Length: 148
Image (cartoon, rainbow, N blue to C red; front, side, top):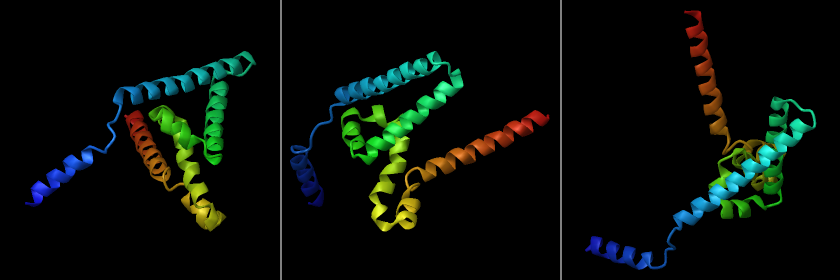
């Protein structure tokens, strides 16, 4: 009896559930992510044209991307852009910058230390810990292999 009711409810609720548009979502993510990458490459070429080295130009572009994502998050525009573009803006470093700033903004009313300071790394913290730990382990393994 319970299975029949659950199945009937599932059929009923599926009528109101919007169907995902996989192709359009993928196309938007591809176009927006590609646009970010193309703009970043153009900006990097501009920095190189102004006399910056390749590495310095790349660092400048990454800093600009991070600052732009933080600014857009602070102004409340990043979520609207991400809703349209999907993974195209979430996957690159812009998504990481957003994941650090969004919780800090959400908890700023609790104060600088307990709000912003404590919540700044709530989403990005596990990523940082895993990244730093794995890079240390790989570095130690690389060092040990170099001894033999």
